[in-house]
Image (cartoon, rainbow, N blue to C red; front, side):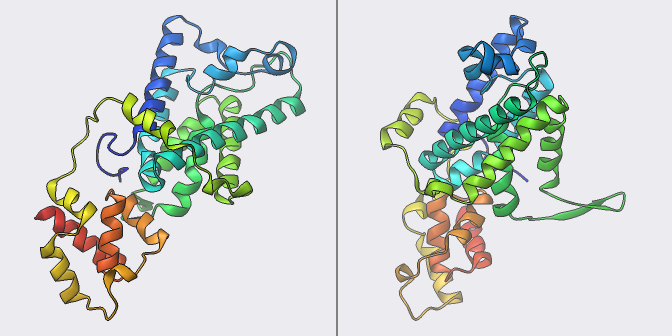
Length: 293
């Protein structure tokens, strides 16, 4: 299972965030200051360390955490492709701020001035992303290993579990706070899922990012984003005749999300669903056949 097409196509915000995490982690690791990045009661309530608050959002405190964290961030770029860079930026900001609020509350309750209770890194964003991953990403394959049944999503859960327990209590608490933040986003508190930044914000990230190293979209995929190629259109209409005009059928959002999670472009997925009368399986065949031609 992957997060769609390789590279960062249609995921500029994820690319910038991932690069920032890597650079901050390497920078403080070279200086030998990684162990000082975790937040404690003193950092918040005694001597407010602004630099720690900022750095703790990006920098991991160890190399294993960095590897698993970057892997999960890279995979979860599928959500930026699904909801768009603008709303994904809102999701990042909401997840980071809400999870940080829960972490501060936990520090205030525990009140241990000597312990470094919270590890650093974007745990809030990563574990908030597991909420839509659980609910919105479908299982595509099942298999057995030594009689135990696994799905293609199991590897993502195992990577998340490894990250969650990497520093035991210091990483467990930020992970739980991230899951709470993701749950609140899914519940659409304060109508947060409708919120959007001004367009110049996300366009700034697109200009700031260098060209993606992933596979460029094929000609057939680019054609499908605007108009489904005539060959596949004729086949869809022949196989799935409709009395209503295809343009009058608006595909459900969950059907579009299912196809996007498989790695297809959002506009392409919508066009294929229109011509397949919102049949996800038929739309998948249309998209695959369009890529083959």
